[in-house]
Image 1 (tube, helix red, strand yellow):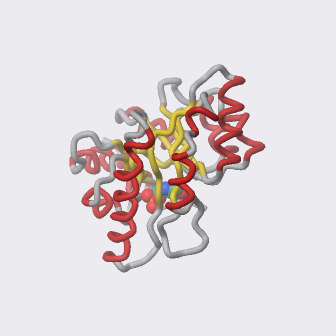
Image 2 (cartoon, rainbow, N blue to C red):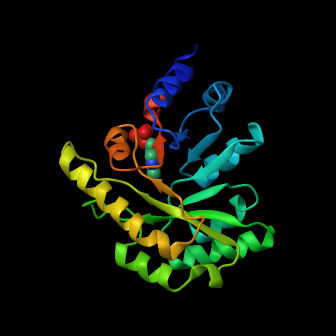
Length: 220
Ligand SMILES: *Cc1c(COP(=O)(O)O)cnc(C)c1O
């Protein structure tokens, strides 16, 4: 078994039923993604459009691609034909552009709303209140080519486990509050990375985004 296959097997064996493992393959070569694919991995995440566009045509078509990094509105058109889920929706303007481009491709596109839960100002996303307002205004009517599939968040980069736990817990609470407003497609709570996913799982994550613990440290 390759190191990558072993890592995937180890992480999977600790996942509760119903939790999705997203392999974050940014900065890793196509060969590494193929190893993961051969180990049965089908859900991959990239954080830059350019890198995603370079890799996607070289890999099998049954991969479910997620975008997890900041997305500029002028780049939505490049990924709209094939992307499975855009996890990093951080403004109403971006949501509208995704709707427009999905319409052009005759697709319905799945998105997650990125919520700013970390103490750090550098992280992107809606505040909980902005997110409530957005969902109360019924984006399903304004953006018929979009399905809001849930929320995504990143905890603070800190050694303080208790702070990380509280941030994940606040995201779970918001998810539970918004679920009745948001409709049936709203079923994914994306939280947890290599360094903090066990805590995220304890706090109710349904999708973990794992890079380093699958592929090793990134070669920057
Ligand atoms: C890079 C990245 C990850 C994965 O981080 P690791 O620490 O390598 O597991 C998860 N989510 C987002 C948004 C990322 O940019």
